[in-house]
Image (tube, rainbow, N blue to C red; front, side):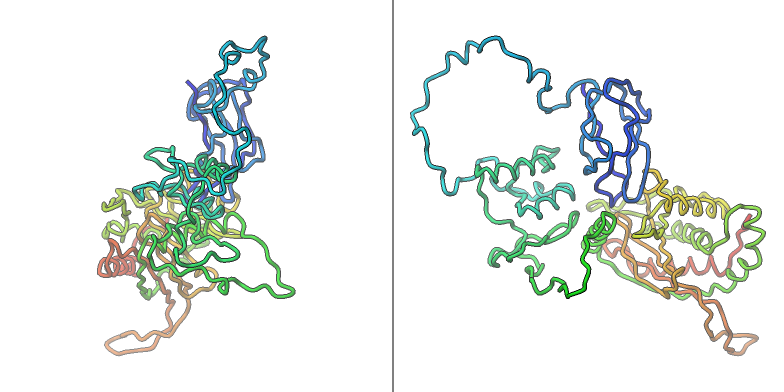
Length: 462
């Protein structure tokens, strides 16, 4: 039985991968979970094991080629389901025409050269779907539909549950070019608005366009950026495109609400100053502020489990473990590796895990598992001097904590029964939360728990 090997998805926001090296060739045997090939994305380089055992009969993607996720890249033990006939069979000479061909039926009574119809009617396969479920498909297919001005309601889906696949839309485009299908204009713009002279995507891949009659404004050419003499124009790289799509999808999916708290980090700053030299010598990693906050976040999430949850349709998934995503800035973007079961780690274990993930993220040595399964995220723009930010939720999570810079500020405190102005190390932190399931009171409890844990720090560092 043939087994198809597909390009895996290397993270929530990654839509394609590049084959860098095949470790097995056609005709060679590969065992289940044995390394099969190396792939690369803008964020991750890794070795992919074979999902099944068998003999490689076909390699469809050459080294150096980039293809979308879920594309069939190789076949084990025979031709793939639905694949074209093998070239050997196609090239086999026929000694004589088969009998049925020789006895072909009489020609149909039609004109030998009929004129092509001006506007052929769509076939039954391209009738509009009766349910919006037909529009459920991959971000790649949605992007292709918008770039080619295809209304997905008129594309017959052959995927599971009637989903439109990449092959379906490519077939539809070829049929349309050949004049064998005619459909109305795409349904993403208002039907009464004239088509703009230069079509532009109504929404990025992965972003659900509003239905007809929604509140999305019609495209307006005046919104496009003007290019002046001396300006440089260059396309977004793949990482920036994917980040853009993922962020727009998140803002569309989750009603974001924000709250901000002020933290007195003086005790943590003084503790770090006393211990950082000895800690680095014994632990082998630098003592930063992130493991302090990460440990406090684990404590607060266990006390407020709704922020360590996800939305699935009309259900709430409460995660048993805290899989903590930590945003890491790269040269031209960012990535969010995940500390799995973070609540079970000691301070030292957390510090080592954070240092390891950050180093491997910057050297593109993360694995697929390193960037999947997060349940809550921390981002720290404060290291670059930002006082505060309001981050976009990393789907399908429902909360993200933003750490501002730690700065010295005059603060009014009560000392020995009297008010006094003292200099303290203060830090602003904000949390963005999904108001579909999280309310302000829950978030405030979380932030208070976080602040209390940091203010009364009692964990040993080693």
